[in-house]
Amino acid sequence: MESISTYLHMVPLPVAVLLSIFLNVLIAISGVLPSAFLTAANVAIFGFWGGFTVSLVGEIVGSLIAFGLYRKGFRNVITDKTKHAPRLQKLLHASPREAFLFVIGLRMMPFVPSGLVTLYAAVGTMSFGSFAIASSLGKLPALLLETSTTYALVEWTQAGQYLVFLVAIGLLWGVWKNFKNSQRKL
Image (tube, rainbow, N blue to C red):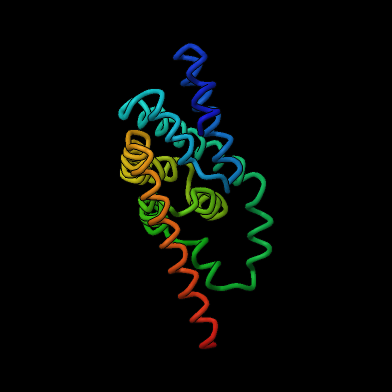
């Protein structure tokens, strides 16, 4: 994050905004890279509301471009591969209303991988317009939460950042321990 932040600080503001949006598009197309580090860089450079706005525009543009690319590249392949999976077929052929609400719901969860949500919508029957609206509406609260979190981390002292790191490690350890325990029961 620091190298991105440092570089974006060195270029004129309009260029920094466009570069950040471009990076968000690349993140969205990849489908697996998290955007939180870019949100943190945006908050560090543009402040809370500026960082939120640049991140929101970048994530929306990125998800729309990724939707188009995923639809062209993966729709036929996934449709063929899931022919014999009735549950997946049901999910991919959800009604327009169900798909719309599903995308909004998944987008509202900040730690659900955006690439999976976009892939689901792109290979399903959801229209581009419905996806654009649902995805954008769902991103608003999730990105506001992510921006608030990253703003707190950027503004906190190093001790506060270590505290968050330790809590995250503790949560991961707890999840790992529960996973191991559930594996033993099988």
